[in-house]
Every structure is written in C-alpha cells, then in structure tokens.
Length: 517
DNA sequence: CGTGCCGGGCA
DNA sequence: TGCCCGGCACG
Ligand SMILES: [Zn+2]
Image (cartoon, rainbow, N blue to C red):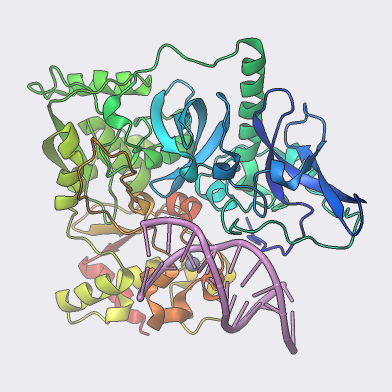
C-alpha cells in the first residue's frame, strides 16, 4: 500500500515475453531467465533465450528471439498466426481486456471471445492482430486490477539476477518498446500482478483444451453481427458478490459505445416497471445477450465524465451507487436518499444510435480541474477559484505526494487516501472525483460496416497533467512530474478513492474558505 | 499535435 | 533513489 511502484531499469533478462508452447503452438507468457549465445560460424553467433513460463506446468524452454513475442522481440502481427484458444489482450475503453482466440479469419484478423471476468460471457468480436497483445501490459495490469494476489507466483517470477552473458543485446528493430512492457518483478506486493496469475491459468487451460479436443468452440454464445466491428464490451451488471468485484465490474461495463448488453427489448419497450428491469438484470448477469434492432431505453450516467450507459434503471442505479456514490450505510439499505436519481438520465435509442445519443448529451460537466475551477469561480465569487472543492479533494490521493508540495494546505487530513467519504444529506450537493468511466475511448475499428462514421468520444483517461494542467505542475503526482506512470489517477485509485465532498452547503463554505492558495 | 509514460541518464 | 527528459505510441 505504501506505494513504490518501481520503475526498474532492466536488462533483457527478466523481460516478459510470450512464447509458443511447442506442442500446442499457443503462446504462453513467461519471463526470460537467461540467454546463451553460441558461435555459429566466423564472427557469427546465435542467441537463445530461456523462457520460464508463468505457468508452472510448463518447463522452461529455449527460443530464438524471432520466436517470441514481447518488447524487443516480435509483435503479434509479425507472428501472424494465433491458434484457437490463445489467450490475448487488447485495449477496450482504455482498459485491458482478456480474451481467447476463437479462430483466425484472415492473415491479420482473428475472432476473439472476451472473458471479461465471467467465463460465461461470450462476446465475440473480430480484431485485427495489430490490436492484440499476447502479454498483459503492465500498465493494464494495474488498470484492470483484480484483487487476488498470487504471492507464490510473484515470488517465483521475481528473481532475474542471473545473466549468463554480459552483452546486452538490444533486441530487434521495429518493435516499439512501449507496448507490452511488463515487469515481472513488480514485486510490490499488493494487487499488482494478480491478473497474470489468473491469466496463467487461462493459458494452460486453453492449451489443455486444445490438446484434448481440438477446437475450443463454444456453441452457446450469442454471436452478434452488430458487434463484429470491433467494439466489444463487457456484459454489465454484476451481482456483487463482493464489493470489489462489483465496482470493478461495473466500471468495466461503462461504455459509451453501444454497450453489449444490448438485447432485444421485446417487452421492455413498452413496459418500464422495475419488474422488467429485474429480469433484465438477471439475464445480463448470466451473460446471455442477444442483440436486436429495436428501440430501447437506455440509462446514462451523468456523473462527471462518466460514460456509463446501461439498459436498465436498476443497473444504472447500481452503477452510480457502486462506482460513484459509495455504499450506503447498511441501515438505510432500501429506503434511502435515492441520491442516484440525480445522476442519470433516461433515453431511448435504437442499437446503433446508442453512441450518438451518448455523445450528444455528455452531461455539462467538468472535464478538468481547471474547467471546474473556472466554473466555480463564476458560480460564486466568494470562492477562491483554486480552492474549489475539486482542488481540495482530488489531490490527496496517492501517498506522500503532498508533503513537500507548496500546496501544503490541501486538506492534509485527507492525505491518507480517503476511501469513501459519505456525508449526510441536508441541502448539500455532492461532488466526487471518481474518474471511473471516463477513460472511455472508443475506436471504430476498421471493418466498420455497422459502426457509424462519426462518433465523438470522451477524451481518454485524464491524468494529473491533463487534470491540473501544465500551469499547476506542482499539483501533479510525482510520477507524473517525472513523466512516469501516474499513480494518482489509476483505476485502482479511481475506483477505491471515490471522494465525496460537500460543497455549496452554507456550512461548507466556511471550511473551504479557510484554505487559500 | 497533446498525452501518457518507458527507458535512459545523471546526480 | 530522486529527478529530468528524449522519444514514441496513441488517440
Ligand atoms: Zn499523476
């Protein structure tokens, strides 16, 4: 928890790569644990890399660099062939998604089925190899965080230290570094690497399936043509068995894109009782999705920057509750403030129009710290612009960031990562900083036969730089200042640190005014 | 072209 | 370890 997300400067040894299992041909992730070079003639030598797979069931094997996929090695396109069952990653809505290859349809396209988090959700999409990664990106691992941590594995994969030779071969060419850069030794306990653990299982599982059957074709997923344009999405609604997953899942579900849970609303078109919502939720929870062409109601979250769009009222409320507002006190369980009602609107749209609808009504909300500052300034001249609640609340995320900052006045008491600060009702208005959904980024992948040409999107995930602006560099988190991965506005924080503060309340004024820049 | 941030490099 | 920055992938 005490942070320390290290930025290791490593050599080739320790690099995360994905190499094909000799038998199945399925790429599995692992770490380069050694490399050996042997003379192969006059002045020529060949280097082989020993890869230790994440999956314990696979013995380490040696590969040439052109056989592996990873930073400095091949990229997926170069490999060109992905076997069915191959676990792949790609970015959707700014987040990394995991899936498996169903089949390859052309030289550079494969049909993949996203896993999201429930194996039962079968959403198939066609993706070009260019968008696919075989290694979870470190960045995404953080973004797509999951809770369980496999310490054993972490420990296991963290030992680099052995390097047979001294010459560090700066790998291959064309391959950009950025991509799947993954640091197996991110040791930093805590959530960091969990997903890879889970992935390892999927990987081996996939191989087992391959070996046994031959083709992992699941006959029971609803294949939707309207979704083959690459915009896949998770199935919404989660039945929060645990809070964590609920939040996370929900977050995933936030999509400005015609979110997947689009099914035929036979009766919902006319009925709008909670009862129908009920069943909707259930169907969706089961991952059963069918797509239709009709008019349908959608509920859009109007929370600042959030792009969530759900097919049912219940879901949107759940979303708002979980993602933005935070849990309500147990006592007030059912009969509550219905505060959620303030943060969503109801619309009607047909499947394809979903996007447009969404984009056409992005709530009048602030998209940056500065923006809001400005707004508040006008709103009430009495407020010191930089003292808007936003200023106050947002920064204190993260860790010891604010210690030395000139802005020491920023709610120092909030420095210990305010989780969820709920406050009573009264005539106050809540504002919070959950960035959750707005990392939305939609990309109309080629082959867009279904997608509408012009679709506006909501800027990608804002980080300190964007949020505070260059002029307020002092407020950035240290990592941002150093041009490193932002630690303040990463999903973990965003999800967990939903800070809520009261503003506009008379009594709050006092508090706010005390602090001046 | 702005952003986010990896990899390097330098105290 | 901080701290800075070139440079690049993406949007
Ligand atoms: Zn930051």
